[in-house]
Image 1 (tube, one colour):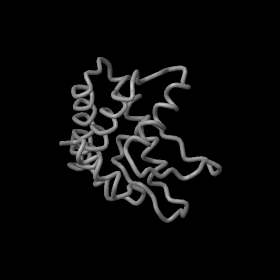
Image 2 (cartoon, rainbow, N blue to C red; image 1 turned 90 degrees about the horizontal axis):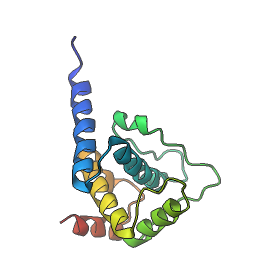
Image 3 (cartoon, rainbow, N blue to C red; image 1 turned 90 degrees about the vertical axis):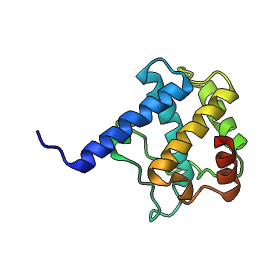
Length: 144
């Protein structure tokens, strides 16, 4: 069976992306990895979704499996100046969830930095509108 080269490349990216996240975070199941990535992508989606419909985020197709919901019209556009603000938001959302993913803000910070770093490598995520300079610098410094 012949598969297009782009499909193979994208598929390999998705597999290696999730395996890298699983390994770096020490997660035991693929379901846990998907939950972590979905939680972070949800925040990314809200962060880079500008109020104007012209600006949109394009991420690799294999992330469609995570079925991110579109931002509701009444949900405010999120903006973070610093990484700790994003971590606190995820922490509040996670603590009210019936299926907690994270146990501490350190877990959130580690997952956030690793996932964002990998997405930036794949699609230049940190250059998208919505990522303020101070936030980008903090993510890059935390990645070292």
